[in-house]
Image 1 (cartoon, helix red, strand yellow):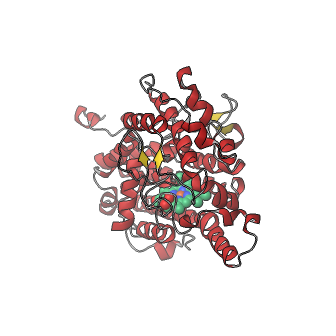
Image 2 (cartoon, rainbow, N blue to C red):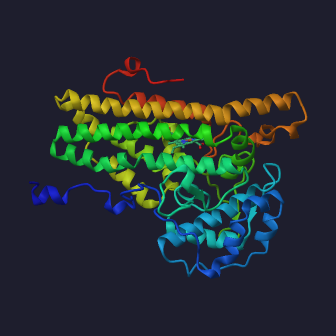
Image 3 (spheres, protein in one colour):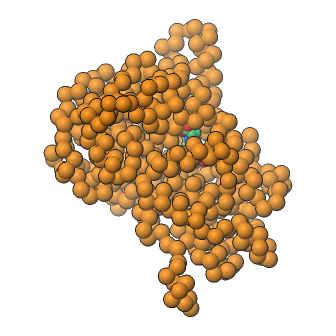
Length: 419
Ligand code: HEM
């Protein structure tokens, strides 16, 4: 039996807004705000059609300036942040990269800023909005799967938008067993129980493999040309973005422009948790991008990552213990994480690099560009992720740093599908 001292020191997920069943996913997101906020909801729900008819900006310009005082509960604030984010991205990118805006009007900017302050999120669309809080079950009693899930809000791009956000949601869901095992690993290290740690690490490695399998669904549900040519711009931000070099003025908040990165699954807390748990050390430039991405997460999730990083090192524990079983389990985790990152690079290549090359080729041939969706994609984003990173070099550096976490050089022996 654990002593009172060790019991009080046990690590648990209780205070980090992590759900037992859904992990970082917001459980049962609200679908409606109090009736006072109907003007927001009416516009936010129509973003795809209003962008396509070039009317979103004029609707938002006529919107009343509403008080945020009637938004109290966490789920209300999350829904408000999501709705305001969708409107903001649509407003900024309605005319593509060539005719962006310098200012967000105060009726949008002021409440957006206030809601963001309450939640500790930035005033831009984040992974926590578009994925974690943007879902409902068609049949509330039915399963949490592709057929039974739908979006609360969307962008132009039809089924591919749903596919992109929902597949990402399913990746989050696949990681829940891994999240649940993190306290078992930390507590096992704390009391020197190498069997418990090994078994929890095996569960984590299985869960990471399931994340990779879920990510494979991207190819089923998302059309790369629609992703690249139509919807990707709406995820883009106004930091490190050549289309908006000055950033964006939030009217009524501050006269100076502000810069924020767009939505990216680099803002998902999952891999940040695994990196801290396994002791993956990132190189300076990619590490600082990833650290900056943590400021785009709900504060409780960011805190969890931070607290995992403060625990005694799992990697050193595995090194010191004589158990071969433990070493194997740790290696399996790093191998699966490496395989996930390698597979993700494949996905990015298919959804960004290949369409970008095609768009360049079409431009050089100066063909009838309107014919092809990819050629309508913003040129400024060709080399960049929506989070603003220089894509491939960043992703490959992060993947290679993961390899350095092996206790000894097994990377050649294990042969994950590296590119
Ligand atoms: C079509 C699908 C996807 C594309 C095109 C894509 C693209 C990208 C890009 C361009 C980056 C670089 C950072 C940035 O500037 O945004 C990135 C980073 C990242 N993405 Fe994705 N992504 C996709 C799906 C996903 C999914 C479903 C996940 C899982 C939750 C994910 C997890 C990550 C992570 C964790 C990073 C940070 C780098 C790392 O830790 O390895 N991505 N992604």
